[in-house]
Length: 271
Image 1 (cartoon, rainbow, N blue to C red):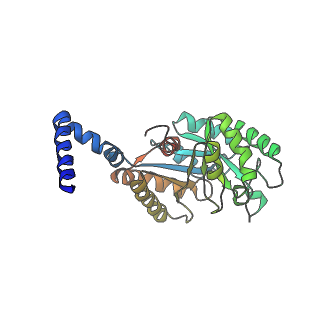
Image 2: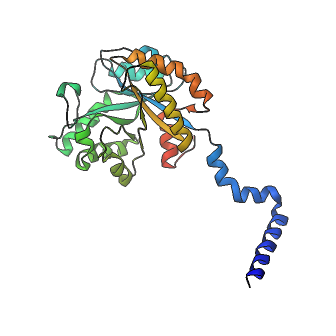
Image 3: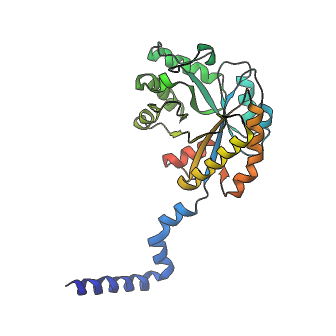
């Protein structure tokens, strides 16, 4: 009986080859695998803390001829200006929303922070007003915020506004207990998470090493998201990113706006 079954399989394969030809059969069997394996890996570099009075690294990063994603803090002296300039230069803009951390100082947050003492309506109002000071925002991420991101109750109002405005969310992963992704997934808000921090050590060598690590992540999973900063020490980050661009390209990785990776991750677009 097993011998007859084997011959039946062989006969079926021969008939299928005769009907489709080798090329057609190859497409039927291998297309899905080849689509995944031949897609160029992509990397989004998100730079936080735009908008403030400390402009170290801002001009250098905005002058790059490759796309970065500019995360702008709300209600600061340069929030509107730098959002518009980044958009004009072809960079993607997102709101860098300050949120209360478990530990830290209040002045780190700046105006427009989401705090644990706020009601859901207060959170919605604050978040909506913040977006007005960051023109062209396509999404948002958290500035610090470990206390807020750990609470479903506190992240839900922001995600409700994001959904109503067609925005995506980037979880910067400042807390391993973050609820941003579970809530975003349940609400069908497009989401993505940070893979690599670039400049936790303000050294050009370290930042380049982190960028190369991000490239390795991109080659393994198809995409990667790395976060750096302007402001104090921001010129080091800017210089390292500029010098790393040829290295990124040599690795076969393409720099893209964050929204391109969001589309890829959420299955509603192709890079």
